[in-house]
Length: 178
Image (cartoon, rainbow, N blue to C red; front, side, top):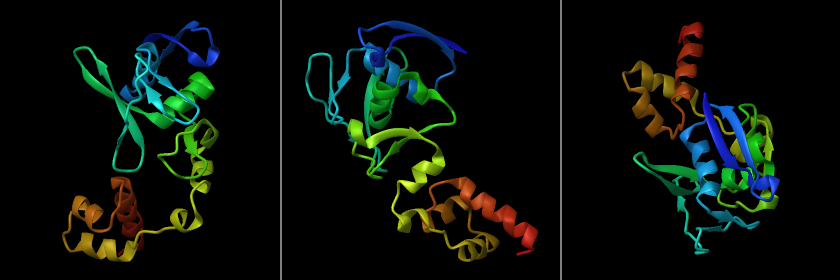
């Protein structure tokens, strides 16, 4: 557990607040964002402490991020949608049961009105039906796996983002006797 003292911008007036929790680098970066004087407006534009607008980088999945310099530890990535959610909801975003949702399913739209907290299920329903109902071709993937294709290579070939997707297929198909 880590003791973190930070200014919670959602409280207004820069009130110091202490919380005990174990935070990831990503979530620590969100707190550092505000402590180091960065700001985010209602449209999702980010400025440094000198008021200069920053250009976040795209992580390859459409999410915008900025890097926060941390002494001796290099940089931490601060996802802009989580920064906006922190400004709007405070420490609630650190709940393991909640995710930050983009209501229009556009991961680069970080406007305050487009960001809400919710469950993973709610997050999936924010996406268009054709995206959320997509299924990987399990039969073809299993044929490749049984023919010696590695999980990593199958992930690339079938554009599977999560290794667990394929490992779950392997477990299911062992039961079926594939």
